[in-house]
Length: 324
Image 1 (cartoon, rainbow, N blue to C red):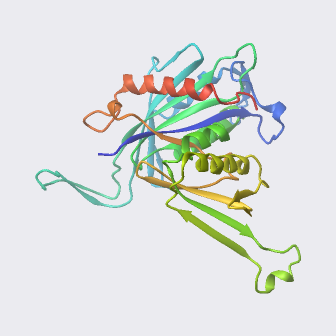
Image 2: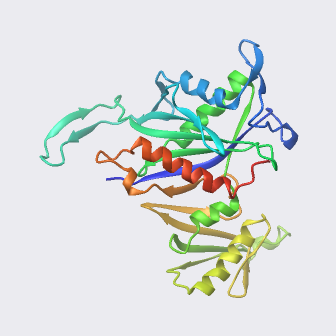
């Protein structure tokens, strides 16, 4: 049976075609919008942006390019608030089609159904949106998205693609999805237990293009595996990793050698990821969901899952910067 996990990322809204941080909207203020098709203008709350999105896609969408289905189940009770944030959630039904297969009973080995190429095996996934409340120190611009996964199956990419399109077309808003925070990503993902390999790259390319046609120039890659280090040695490696992740041109130092690029191969559950430490901005945190939340059918218990989302949200909010 597949384990459950969650993918976490941050989000914010910005005026389209703008890179100026002054054009990032505050989540707890009404946002001015314009519908590209009708020309209608008005103001709307962030929570209602997501509610309208979920209601728009209550009817199934067939993504023919990627051969996936997508629809949202939403009820007017699927929102609320805690001490620190407002939330809204939906249950996304998504499946893949395009090839035929046999569905068998694994206990009897008997054929139950012959799945055709135009039939999709839809699974249910929770999407939980967190909108932090303003406080005396900060007016909030960044929120959180939690995507629940089932084993290797998830729906972050297709969901965020629909979000970007919907918010742009209906409200002339640019929807941005980013990592929660680089420090929190490292804390959650790059742990002593998760890391399998360090992939260190030294760039020997010369600024003079003529040099690079000769022997001795190019890229040297060193891979270190089976990392069994004492805590003091591991702390030293982690400090070097954190320094490397803070800037595109920060070098990684290992055994008195400096490397231009560091990639880390990690194992989370049954999935392996290779992470470029100079490219954390667009990466999501993936972490396991406790086994007691999974029911006998492999799906999450809704009450326990929502409580877990609230717990994780409070943990993340205590460590992330809420303003761009």
